[in-house]
Image (cartoon, rainbow, N blue to C red; front, side, top):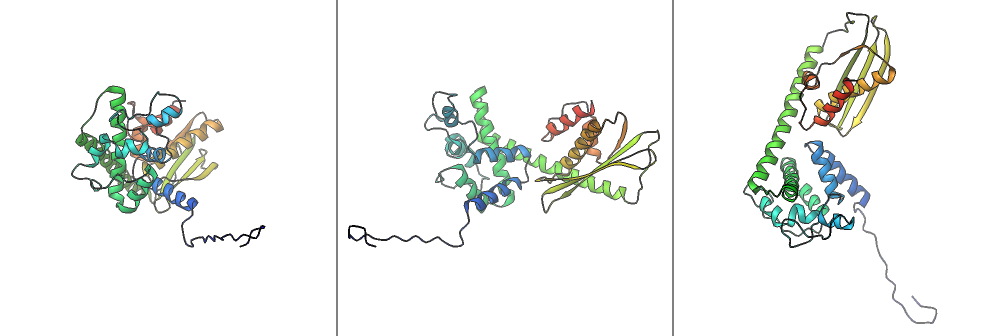
Length: 301
């Protein structure tokens, strides 16, 4: 290539690598993997916050002028960003070094949490990955307990609490799935029964599409003669829990009745576990507690 003054200039040609994954596709796959995790919703949101650098680490708080320095409150050696708090800090490394850990010999070579998460997702089995997620959240909880309460749990305690909590969640989901499937079997062949009094009757139900990670909700309101007054069918994505599906079905049913001004109505559903949770007078502190308590407040209106 020749410049205007006649001098020679080298021409550099760049070629785009074909077949590479676009950043948009990579991000989409990353979020899809996060929301597909078989863990409580709060755990998924925590991973989402970590990947978006949205955790209130000292480094992030300094940027918002909430604190005066970025130093890690646990080791006081380095700036506390997400990667340091959850992986590099000695207060996190001791947890990853316990005997069971499939990543105890991994190097601290990741530049940020996003690259760490990509490696975890690619190299670990789904069962190991959900345990790692539970423990990552446990590490952050221990960090907060140390900052606000000056208490520092042992690495074995962090692992035990995280794993037990995850196993309880998995066991509860299995029990709910079995009970709901039995309820479906009992329901087959049974027709609609009109209410004993001159009331309207609302029937609600939910189903789970595990393969496509979504739930379907059906709601129908009939008068005392069986004539249909209202029928609603809707879908919610990124949900696979039968229990949450039934909770949403009830919550939306109540909101519908309030919106349409039904003062007295008979409601009928077949999710015994969910209905018992709604009728309980005790505060629900389970992983689904917020949804249950919100629905209880609607029922009281």
